[in-house]
Image 1 (cartoon, one colour):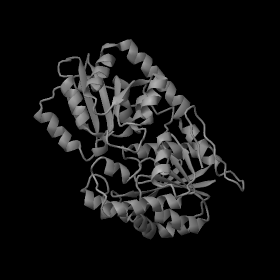
Image 2 (tube, helix red, strand yellow):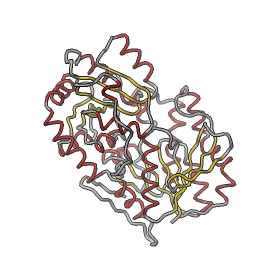
Image 3 (spheres, helix red, strand yellow):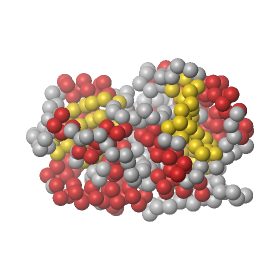
Image 4 (spheres, helix red, strand yellow):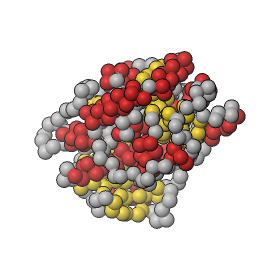
Length: 413
């Protein structure tokens, strides 16, 4: 089968979506499929550049910078993604034929492109939905329900309309569609995030000595630092742990809150908190292999639910997870059930602090929970399961098959 994948960022980006799509593409390739990944890029010189990378054909199409720019610039450029990719990639698209389109959200702006490509190739499309926008932005207070919201909401609906099947990332996401879009009839299923179980060997690990963290229990946060993550939650935790000389918080990533967070830590003179820019995937995995606990933070106002992509790296490296999350998030039940970490509601600073101390002071507990964390990954978040689940719908049959593997699966139509 020839499979076309479109995503808003790909390697060498350190974004979790880049790794998710890379791992999925490689697994689809190993299953005997031909895979093409199309992605916008602001670093190429020509309108379209093709490269073969690990057996995948990567088509990068030149666009303006989308990430780490002012919100109004990002919104304008993302809104033009479909038209830009179609205009510059049209000669390439017209010379191809595919049997399946897979598109990834975020971004919410691929709907028109996918619709055109479906007509061109007469094939179905599968939407991997990882971010319910604009609802989360309203919940976090970033966006009000005015004209901008209505514009984004229409783009959200456009992408759903372009999909034959929508894979959401947690059972709670199904409730969103039932509550917010009751008049629409979408084919929905739970498709958990995934990762490969056999990463390439990481670079030499030296981060404890490099950052003076020998003898400390290091709580590691990796990935996006934005409004939805409530990074002040991490600042408050660091403040509450200042009297614990053997505990350190290390944050690595980027996002809209990175600069403000760095300034806040400096103003408070938090010697137990380090904030570093994002790194490439291999270096990121090397860091994870050296530290002790994986941190998760989600704003308590969020009403849409997700399993943050960062937990995959934590689980891969057998780290216990310390999470402070929004009400109703399935991650809490999952961690409690599997004993892979400790969890509390965002805003309950006392419990967050207490959980951190419990993990910091008990090495055997960290080891047990880390073992359970890795086991959870192997049983429910492997790329093999994700690829098998997606492909099962598109076998050569007149009737799509709706299936799901995993202990925590929910499938609906």
